[in-house]
Image (cartoon, rainbow over all chains, first blue to last red; front, top):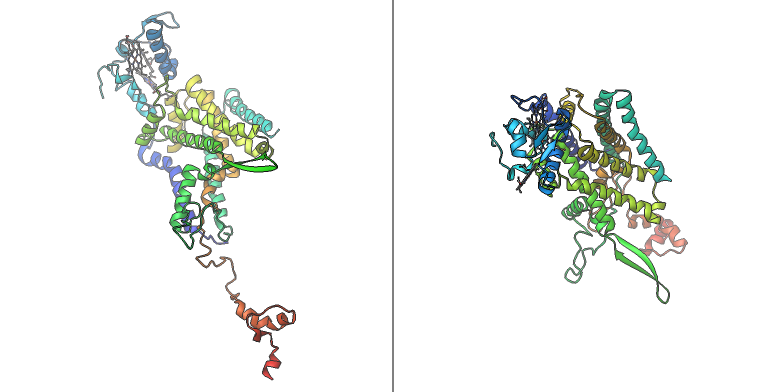
Length: 129
Length: 346
């Protein structure tokens, strides 16, 4: 049987299909091939505060805990799993090794679509954006 | 019982990827093959369903109205343009409010019976269902849109905007999203309604409970992944971008919670075209909402009438059957039609 309201239905369906398949079109036409960003390597240091896997997935949680420990509990020393001690500080610990925010933190964050609001207050080192 | 079976089935669905990935190492099956297949089923099934609906017979105007029709005295009885739309534009606005604001649910009423020198029926506005539904649907919609950050590079501005507004409370890191809470709360309320209200429980099938449990499981697995299990998002973006650019690759850093989440979403996508969830396109095709109430103003020709069958006006009908009608004692508009032909000729 023929369609009675064919035009609006097909038009609506078309809009939906185009919208939902748009990521494929954009991926093929604009992105072409995607590689994970490579944050800038740290010179002179071998290890982060914890293992790389841990840092990659849990650094936001760690920073959140640091903030609470430092400001609520007054605990400003962090002992990592290997027993090494670090001063709890975003600017003076993380950013001492990862000196370039734009080439390190932002590399991932741009691709992950997050923009941590920490830098509204905390001073960022070089690589100001 | 229906609820229990649905819940058990969702548990089973969680176990499949856990075994598949951890024990059987089918990482590319669960990371690429199943999601892509599910997406294709979703797309083809969705289109197929809508096309079959578009090809089915369209009824005569059957809008449900809830307001004053255009009257002889428009000052005394003004037309209710949204509840009794009579033009295309009025119907359009009615549909816009239906789709974006769930207006039908907003106008929901609860009936109750009271005893006051005899039974008294009372109707009162009942907005709970509307509240649950709107919380749930908008949260789900925003959550889905936010996922675009994993499927687009560069990420468009509105995804950043959503991310910002959604995380405006800045609770914890990663920041808590309001829609995460809204989605879970919404599903729980809709589920609770079916479980607790005996009348609604009575009419609920497994096909009502299963989507709710499935969506709840999708939401909880996503929340677990983001706030508790912590997955490597950059590795996941490599996988998801691989899907949309057709360069499939499953990085080793991705852990089991991600596969559980993706498997549940795949089940949801594959199930979608065959389920009540098709009310998503269906709401646009609701004949009780998308038709203007203009039967008294416009002549409607039944679209599947055979054009060879000619119209037969009553005047002609009476001319043809006037004699037997007169014999049966039926009243005639024109008494001459009741006189037998041979007598009239004579």
